[in-house]
Image 1 (spheres, rainbow, N blue to C red):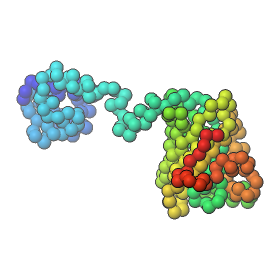
Image 2: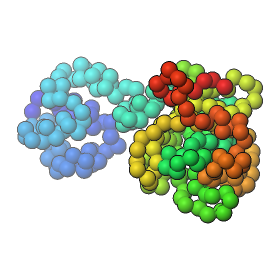
Image 3: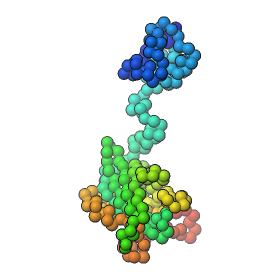
Image 4: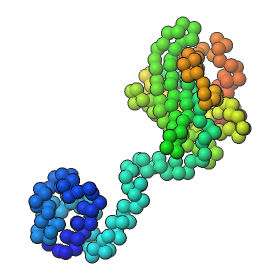
Length: 270
C-alpha cells in the first residue's frame, strides 16, 4: 500500500470523531480498516470505491501527494456551514443572504383573497410574520367557516419563509396538515412608517377540490405585533362579499379582473 494512500486516508478520518464511527458508516471491518491506516494492506477495488464515495473524493485524488491532497480536501470542505447543508437548503440560504431587512413587517395580518376552491367567496385568514435566528418566517391559518352560521367546512395551516428581494416581499408557504400544496405570493412593500395594507399576487390552487392551478390578487391587512389572537381567529372565515362583512376597499383591492388590452393578472402598487 502506498504511503500517500495511508496518509490521505488518515487525514480524511481526522474529520470524524473516531475511527470506529468511520468503520460503522462504511460498514467495513475495524480490524481490516486499521490495516489500511497502518499501510499493511491495500483496499480491494470494491472497498476502494466505497471509501471514495463515502469521503467524496476520487481514487486518483486519494493517491495524490499528501500536501496537495490536503489542499484539495480543505477547498472541498469550505465553507463549513455550507458543507453541512443539503443543496436545496443552500439555495434558501443564498436567498436569506440577499434578503433585505424585514423587522418592520413582524406581526399579525388578516389575509384576504378570493377562494380557489369556493367560487365567489372571500377567505379571511390570520397570518403572522416572525423572526427566529436572524431569519423571517411565516404562518397562516385558514378556517373555512361560514360567519353567518358558524359552520366549519375545513381547516388549512400553512408555514413558510419570507424574503425581501429587489423591493418586493416574497412569501413561500406549504400546507402543513396534508402537505399537498405550495403557495407563492409576491407583494409590494410598505414605504410608510406605519404598515396599512400590503397588496400583491399569489399562485397556488385549492387544497381539496379540482387541484387546478390558479392566481389571484391578495391583500394583507396589518393588525400589529401584540393582538388578541383568539379574537382575531373568530373573525376569520369564508365570506360572501355581498354580505357587507368585509370592507368595500378591501374587496376592491382583491377583485380579479383583466382590463381591456391586458393579458396577465397583475396589480398596481397601492
